[in-house]
Each structure stands twice: as C-alpha cells, then as structure tokens.
Length: 392
Ligand SMILES: Cc1ncc(COP(=O)(O)O)c(C=O)c1O
Image (cartoon, rainbow, N blue to C red; front, side):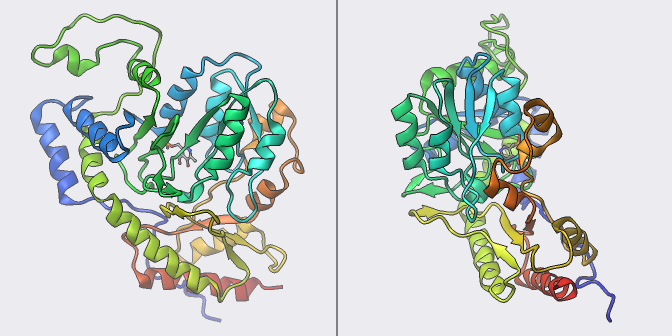
C-alpha cells in the first residue's frame, strides 16, 4: 500500500487573508506615534455601526472580553442562572461563572448544533436572567423562537455572534436590533484584527457603561486624555477592566471589514463544493442548513464521523488526517464535560444527548478564502482514503 500522505505539504486549518491595505494601515499607525486606542478604533466602530443600521458599536480586545462586559451590564447575583449551549468555545460559559452566575445548559439540535428553543423553555426558572444562543459556525440560531420565550419571561437575549459577522436571520443582519451581539476577530474568524471583538447593542446605557468598563471604569480613554485638547484628569465611576482595542488592531480591522462580503462569498462557494463532494462519503456527515430564511457566514465547516461505521475513534481519525497533511479543528467538545464543570456541578454523560453525540464525532475541515478547489480535493481524498482504510 502507498504510505505517502495525500498532500506533500501541510494544509493549515486556517490562515487569515491579509492584504497591502491592512499592512500599510498598520505601518501608518506605527509611524504616526499613536498605536493604542484612538482615531482608528473610532473609525472601525463607526464603520460597524453604519453597517448595523446605527446600532451602538463597542470595540474590545476579544469577544471573550465583550461577553464579560455585556454580562457585567446584567448586574448578576449568586444564584442567577443563564442558559446557553454546551457546544461552544469555553469562554461563553466561563464568563457566566466568572460573573458569579450559574450556567445552565440546554441541548442543541443534532444536525444544526443550534440551541433548541424547546430545550431552553424547559430550563427556564424564576432565577433565569438571560439566554445566550451561539450562532453556530456562521448560521443563525432561531431568534424569533428565542425572542418570544425571552420576552414572555422578561429575560435578556445575549447573542454569541463570534462566528456570525455577516450572518443574517430572516433578512436581518445579526446584531441589528439585538440587545447585545458579540463578534470575534480572532485570526481564524471571517475577518480578523489579530485578536479583537465588537459588541453591537441597541441599549445606549449599556454601550456607555461598556465603554467605561473596557478601560478601567474611567470616562476618558488615553486618546481623550493625551491628544491635543485632551483633558488629563479622570474619574473612576466603577472598577473596570483593560479590554480596549488598539489602533494597531483597528488598522487591520478597517480593511478586513471592507472585504467582508468578498470573503464570505468565497467561503460560501467553498462550502457548497464541500457539501457536494461529501455526498460521496456517507460516513462523514456535514451539518444540515437551518430551515428558516438566512444568510450563512460559513465561518466553519463542521462534519461528524459515523463512529459506528469505522474501527477508530474521532480522535484517532483526526490524528490520521493530520498525518495526511490536512489541518483539522475541533469545534467544540462539550463544555459541560470539561473538568471544572464536571467537578463543580457533577455533570456526567447522559444529560445532553444531542450535544454529547456530536461532541464525540465532530471535527472541522479547512475553510477560508485562501484555499483552492485543489486543496479541497486533497481534503476529500484524505477523508476517502481514511474511510476505506478504517471502514468496519
Ligand atoms: C462561540 C465562540 N464564542 C466566543 C469566542 C471567543 O472569541 P475570542 O477568541 O475573540 O475571545 C469564540 C472564539 O473562538 C467562539 O468560538
């Protein structure tokens, strides 16, 4: 048997598309003498706000920080509960713990990995303060169903939109009209600032408070204190954090954002190719599209391995894919079964059947504008090769 890998060189799981405009803008910041929060962050926020029909836009140094700031605005008390999904990046859930509330998990739908509104309804108690759906992989959660539930129980709907810049739900962009939606600009995301995040909110008081909290809880950031005409004095109105975005980051973001539609169109074309090619490999199951009208941002391309059909586990399968020189991601193992949550809440497998079923089978294949159709064929050939090798 031929032992050579499908590819000679390694295909990265992800790689950002950075052009001359981003590079020149960063150089411009470096040469200007102003590299921390300043006019470029303001420009990036204005761009985002205009795109989101005038929503308040608050730039931060990560989506994790953004989630933290939004949860601070809820003034949570011990015993308060927040319902979210277990198939998410840990920071969605960690932030609930860090803010002193109790995370409560609702199961996801097996083939979309979106939080299930009926499962959320079953978890609502008089202590529930908010629901945090994750717009998973770039497809929207069912916001109408969740909004109906949240307004009936007078609780907040906070959207983890880390994957969803450019996603639309029923012809409306995620973030437009939202109480709060938090986007991520981590390097694997659809647009990047190195690290970074943006909160969109329709709540003016929350926006003011988050602008203070992102910078120590004081009313004047460095630009307002040190630029010409600035006032050096400051006042702490409540203890805050150091979550401000740098101009160096916004310099990248301004030009990435201008290319969002182009990037997302390329992601969509690549995703449709994968969907078609995967029809030949029934043991590798992609997610289903959500059934309501939407625009998918195709942040991730997630598949599930039919572990009943093969002799290896998912983890062994992804190690074998890497041996074939294909980079693989894991989005995401269930958070409720991570050590901290198992030990603190005594969670054991069996409580969230659909999340756990996926947690054992899912992995992500490369999807980003820089890959070619030939790269995609290599991914598919590696999957086919390993399925025939490991088929029962
Ligand atoms: C669903 C989800 N929420 C939140 C985050 C946190 O984003 P950041 O890395 O910008 O803090 C991520 C990051 O991957 C994510 O996937």
